[in-house]
Amino acid sequence: MTVPHPAQAPLPEAAWGPLLASYVVLVGLPSGVTLTTWWLGRQRLSEAAAIDRYGAWGAMGALALISVLLIFDLGRPERFYSMITRFDNLGSPLAVGAKLIAAKMFLLAVLIYGFERGRRSANAAEPMAAGRKTGSVLAWVVVFISFALAVYPASLLSRSWASPLADSSGSALIFLITALLMGAAAVLLTVSVLGTVPGTRELLHAGRRALLLLLGCFAVTLLFEMLSLAGRAPDRLLAGEVLTGGSAAMFWGVVVAGGIAVPAVGLLFFRTHRKAVFVSAVAVLAGAAATRYLLFAVGQ
Amino acid sequence: MARLGMLVDLNTCIGCHACSVACKAEFDVPLGVFRDTVKYVEHGSYPQATRHFIPVLCNHCEDAPCLNACPTGAVVRLEDGEVTIEEGDCNLNRACMSACPYGAIYVDVDKGAAQKCTFCTHRTAEGRQPACVDACPTNCRIFGDLDDADSAIAKKAAANDVAVWKESEGTRPRVLYIDPRNALSLIADAGVQVDQSVDLPGERA
Image (tube, rainbow over all chains, first blue to last red; front, side, top):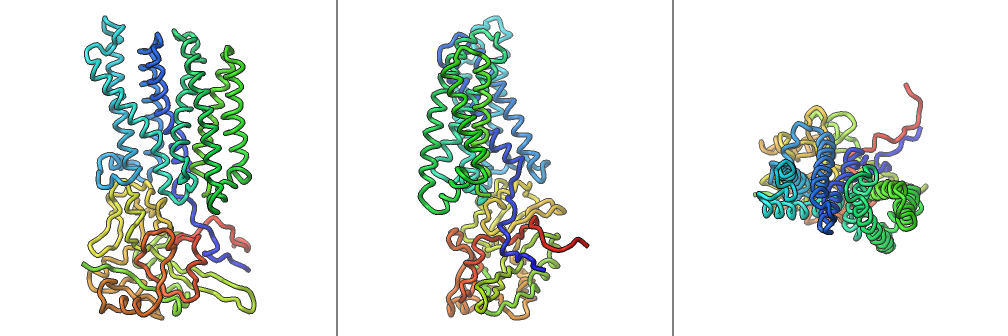
C-alpha cells in the first residue's frame, strides 16, 4: 500500500471559507450603494433627498447583513466585539475594516434619524434643516469610509497566502470598481422594480450612464490586470487558472459575458426597456460578485 | 533579554516522531492538527533515491505575519521573542492562520482558540528544555539563545551553514536548519498542518 507522504499534500485548506468569501463579495455592496446614491444625489435630480434617504437605508441593511456574516464566521462569535474594542493592532486590515464598518453603521444611523425626523417635520423640503451642516459633514465622512471599505478587501486578502490574486497590482482598483458596479446596479434594480418612484426616468437615465461608464472602466482594468499577471511565473499560473483553468468558466461566462457584455448591450441598445435595465442590473451584480469571489478564491 | 530559537540538524533526524508525540502529549493537541511534526520527503530515483526527514514547527519569526494580522491583539511576542497566542483574546477570526505561510497555526475547538507552538514557555520558564527537544533521541534539536555566543545553539549555528524554511517569505525565522542536502526546498509548498482531505488508498476497516 502506498501512503501519500505528508509533504506531498498541499498546504492545508484555507483558513477562510464560504462565509468569509460571501463577506468579501458583499462588503462592496453597501459601499457602492452609498457612493452611488451620494453621486446621484449631487446630480441635481429632483428627488435628491429621497435618494439619500433610500441610499442610507439600503447601505445600513447591507451592512447589517455582512456584519452578521462576519460575526458568524468567527469561531467565537460571542467575542466579536473585540474586533471593535481592541486597538492593539491597527496594522491588521481586519481590525481596521471591522472598526470602519461599526463607524459607518453608527453614522448611517445618525443620518437616517435625521432623514426620518426631517420627513416628519413641517419643512419636509429640507429634511436636515436643524442640522444641515452637521448632516453634510456626516455624509462626507460616510462617503470616505465607504471608499475605504470598498478597497479594504484588497488589503485584507493580500495578507493571506490563500488569496494570491488579491495581491496583484490591479486588485484594489478592481475591488473599488466592482463595489461601485454593485451599488449602481442595486440602485438601478430597485428603481426598475419599483417603477413608480417619482423621478424614475431621471434616475434610470443617470444610473444607466454611470453603469456604462463603470463597465468600460471595469473592462479596461481587467485587461491590464491580466497583462500585469503575464510577467512572473507564479503570476502566470494565476492568470492561467483564471483564463483557461478551473475558474475560466466563471471568468468568461459570468464576469466577461454576463457581467460586461450582456449589460453593455442591454443598456446601450434597449435603454427604454425597463426589463432590459432589470436584466442588465442583475447581470452586473452577478459579474461583480463573481469577480470579487475570484480574487478571494483563485490560487487556493 | 534573550533571542530564543531552535536549530534542527537534518543530518541526525531519523524521523522517529518522538518530538511530535511529546508535543502532542505536552499540550493535548487534538487529532488531525499539529504544533510540531516531521515531514517525510522522498527525492530522486533508483538507485539514487533518498528520503529526508524534516521536523517542522512554528518559526517564531522575527517578522511574524500572524502577529501583524491578528485584529484583536491575541498574538503576542514575549520578552524572549517567542510568539504566542493569548487564548482569552482570540475570537477565532483565523486571520493569523491565513497569514502564516508555514501553516503552523490550527483551531483548537475545545479551547475555542487558535493554537501553535510556544517553544514550551511553561517549561523554559523553569529552566527546562521544550518537550520536543527533550524527547529527541538523536539530539537533532538544540534550543537556546541565538544572541548568546556561548550557547550551544549559537556555537553550532556559527560552525555550520544554516538555512531557514521558505526564506523567500522574508519572515526571518528563529528556527534554523542544518540542511546540507537542501531538503527544505522540497517542502517549499508545504505547511506544518497536513491536508486531511486527501484520499488514502486502502480498504475501510
